[in-house]
Image (cartoon, rainbow, N blue to C red; front, side):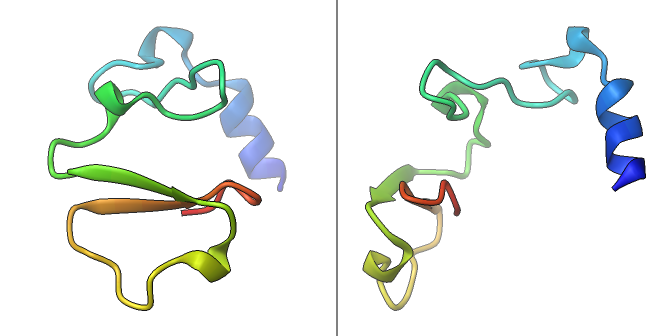
Length: 70
C-alpha cells in the first residue's frame, strides 16, 4: 500500500487526460469516451454484475453501476 501512496503522491498533473498519461474523470466519476482506446466500440452499463451477459462481446466494456467495476 505504501508504494501506491508514493506513486499517487508523485503523479504529474500535466499527464492527466493526454496520450501516454492517465485518464481523467468526468463529473460522474467516469472516464470520458474520448479517452478510451479506439478498439472500444461501446460501453454498456448494468445495475449489477449479476446482470452482465454470460459471454461478453469483443470491443465492448461492461460496467456494473453499483460497484463501478468492469
